[in-house]
Length: 153
Figure: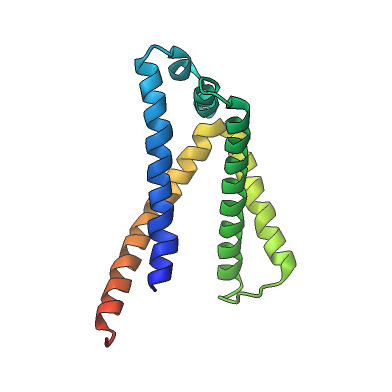
């Protein structure tokens, strides 16, 4: 249980805080110093516009692209695994064609949202599905705390 809490909750949260503090603080500092290009850039390229102002921008931009790709691939893979497990009735070793179907379907929905309404539609979909799920996660957190408290030491 300690390993799960440390590796799934604490470490990713700390890395996210570090990432947002370092890059967000750098961007705010640059805008305050008069680098208006970051504020004027389109939302999808603000990170790369900020990285262009720093030394070794080609290397850091490449690392940023790799990190974004890894994030999307792992998130999509995790989502497909969860949907596949749910539709397989809880079986972890569901048929491979079923997993491929859910991966493909998830990608097609994302493409349809991007083509239909752009990034705004994709973000709205993520928020609208994420909010109810956040409530369910809070209930699950409460349940696991109650369950752990009832366990004998």
